[in-house]
Image (cartoon, rainbow, N blue to C red; front, side, top):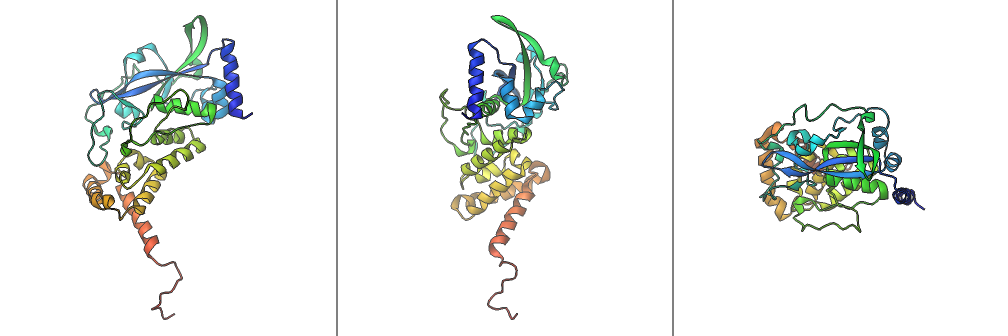
Length: 312
């Protein structure tokens, strides 16, 4: 029996005898472009033993010491009425967030939602300072009065965290297509893992230092890139923050550099890089530098090799 199956069996036995799940995570699920914030909390319930056994991040988080993550705080009832600003969330173009007002049509490159002028700041009174994990103990009434830890996660979407917990339980994960692929939306089934964005999961996997998930998510990103969406993905704010994603995207761009789609749209990317400068397009110079390096590696003769015109 695998360790994951043993963990699932243990959780099942607990449920049969009425033992509750130790921790409730609350995460935002929807992006409101009109209000400029992240809203609509949804809960997820988890067994501490499974999380601690599967991840060093959760082992530290669920210990008696204060967590080192400022984006996880004690959940309070008044949080149900509020939200987190796009700046506070720090990844406003997250594909795992549902759109409250419907999807905007995009023509060309992704225009990151971070640039929206609408901002709704969460007051200091609404978001408390990160407390000790001991302070997370509250009383929930569900048939019996039981002790449960309630945690508000302010920088990750509900779908991404749900996929993470499912993976830690089962070692199974399914990645949704990138939005730039324009693939039809597939509704998830209870018979399969809940899907999530590979970009969102890569960001989370880097945060919790889960190398295995980083590898799986990066491979999914690579397999989703084509001549039709690689330039759009290079314009993403997430690309500027993760060198591994940038490296993969430049590699795919170079493979398709002579295709009709890239040939037509590449000048638009150059114009954006030149026009935006380092502030609006911080990784623009890095894109061109890496692309130039690949061109040199492709065109320049290996060191020490002589041409037919060489005299020595």
